Length: 182
Image (cartoon, rainbow, N blue to C red):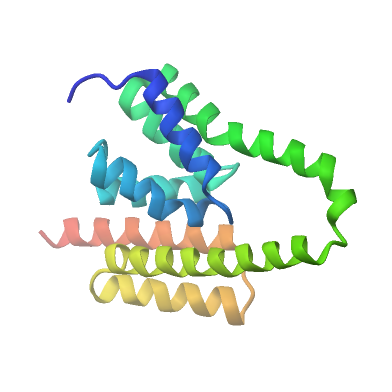
């Protein structure tokens, strides 16, 4: 694969950051469309791995995933380009919103616009969850981990960090068990 321009990385991730509302999960369909399907920089599995690692590391999932992709493509300079690209729109928009928020927060049209945005974000997140389900939950072991994680998270109110660590440990133990059986 030819070397990707740092400017191309910056502007592509700037575009993603600009049109992603609702956080990292809402960015996943756009990132998949651009980095996996269109540019073919990474595979779907790599993208899910980056999101999984990004969720386990400090910071914003979308920024972490962008950083991993940039690093894979161009090393440290790629990491810097993609990270700055994905956060630049947020910095610009948050600054503008902070300046205007007090003025327009009580405006009915403003409230309706945000209500519409919230609804579309839910649809984006559901799309992401469905895609992650299809690509991430495989075999009886995957379904078992999902079921246990859901019970621990929703009913027993365990910490997400503890659940991710437990799931990672489970996967590692399964791998070791399978190797021992050989």
